[in-house]
Length: 341
Image 1 (tube, rainbow, N blue to C red):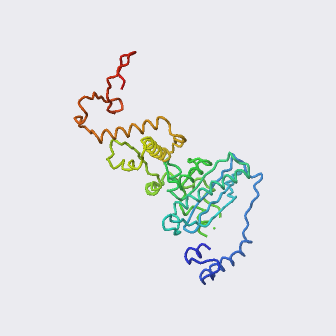
Image 2 (cartoon, one colour; image 1 turned 120 degrees about the vertical axis):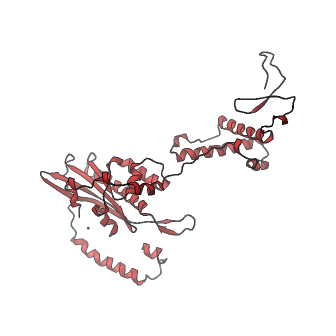
Image 3 (spheres, rainbow, N blue to C red; image 1 turned 135 degrees about the vertical axis):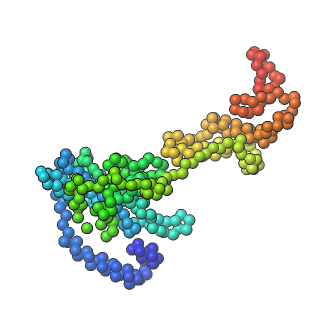
């Protein structure tokens, strides 16, 4: 169905091309063999959390992504591997926000989707069998996904949301690399039995020898760029305030700039994961005062710059703690003798 829409751009009432009809007939004919598949599903009395471990495998291809969960049960000198649950899904298409055309999603992102449904399957199995304390191993042949899971970072939205879900139901220390040729989920994602190598622990892949350098570069492509916002009107030019010519009130200019500075501050906090620092509601007195100060500093710089000779000679001026030029008046306070400024 996806191919009919994507490759041939067919509508509901159009006749299917011969190649898709042939592909469908072959698939339909293969359904007859499903009755020959037998999967043991009785686990009562077999699962002992002290001698049983849970193993999830996830994988993806350009056509589909999948995950499967196995129980590794030890009793006496024997080890049994039993499939508990599996799920596969057709790889979705992503829509280009500009051209609105649908294109294939990257393999690393599909691998991440596989990891997500894998963690969900594990939670489902643990709840169904009431084995919440069982030791669990999460296996994937995607080094990029492991980099996302095991390394802290502020990832872009798509990756961030799915890594957050994975971390909420699994520990990053329980995720392991498995070579593609040993990944049993590879069969489900590409369209064969339990991992025989899982019986012998000495045959498990040695993840310490895995080289992740090549994957790290791909993983960091999904890292959110660090946003640096340093809005200082002292460093701006006169064009910055061109928009103020359309505003009749000084207070409106102050409030507009305060909202701009709040937006930039919230954007920086959101990117750095500091959602508790977001500013909301009405503008505070501090925000308004800071905005007004920046405007006054800008106006003084544009008017006087470093040339104090432009200041009338009969003005007694000084720089306050904020760097703003102020004028001392000749009015005296009769109570304190201090100048009013």
